[in-house]
Length: 439
Image 1 (tube, rainbow, N blue to C red):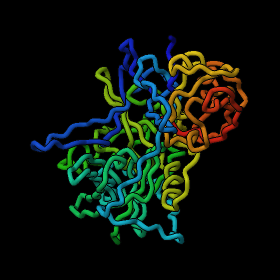
Image 2 (cartoon, rainbow, N blue to C red; image 1 turned 120 degrees about the vertical axis):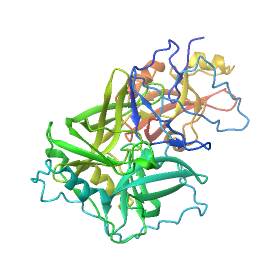
Image 3 (spheres, rainbow, N blue to C red; image 1 turned 135 degrees about the vertical axis):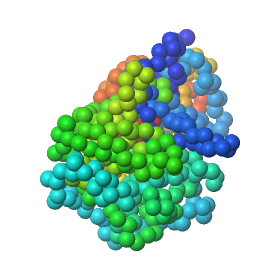
Image 4 (tube, helix red, strand yellow; image 1 turned 45 degrees about the horizontal axis):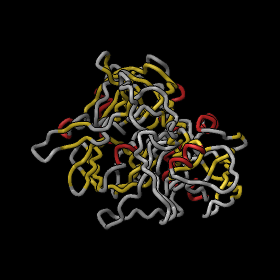
């Protein structure tokens, strides 16, 4: 029997191939063990061969259906990314109730962008560091990770950081370098752009000034402020230059599958685990980026990347206003359907299905994620996909090729052939849904 396509699922390459360098998300899952404070970094995003399909778990829709072995090594799938789980609402954090008339900050660039403080880096630190902080994330009362952040609006108590810094925690503490600390709640967070906004109940917090990242040039000096590696190093500043602009970086999961492409600034500032979410600052003392990750390899020094601030502020506004993010200049997510499929004949054989009616060629859905958009729109296990948004589907490869021309968030129309329960007849059903982002 030939392999089946998992259009969500992914297994490690059987040939042992692995990318020879990785993207390290600096600070997400920066752990302490219980034995005395040893800290290590767990999360690494591995960049490898482009794979179109991703791992997911599928659930049968009907209790009396036979469940095939989804761990079958013959499995192969088309897919994507479940949305971020809701943060616990168990009273462990205060609720942040967004005022429907909330005033969304403008985040206008500062007028002093022409200043050059490169001869007095201490002045930049003295000006900017009071707005910077450490973001501590705990799980069940145990410190799980640390990252960095900075105040983007003093009046509203809003603090920016990376999504991957806070996504796994249930308690968040913001600690400023002078020792002041506040319990924080998530106002909004977006996995695709990797941005998050926190809220703290505090008055008079010094906020950063914003630069214009659309005008930066290669060779311009920059500094990064954050908390690399450990709380004892909070408030570390490193220096460097802008090494590249508008770098399109493919972000992959642990199996080498491309899940999104991000457009980032490149810098040679020293960026380490814990720096994630901190500001990248120009020589006028204005924030021009949010440090996010670095390329690491044994053969060369780490190459750092930052999210451009001129694009990020649009995301901040939407997160604070409670709006959906949609398209952005920061990242384009790869699409998923959320299904695992076989070529029709292979699928019927695998599930020991013997139709008593004629049926079309296409792909048979073996599994479907219960939380994907396709499932919500009515797609079901054992449906046979015959058309994907106007493109005929005859086998797994044709479905993969059709999906490759789309991006997450696109609305597609999929035609399926659906058997009745006795397999004596069937009907064609057209299902419309938005493609989910790959994970």
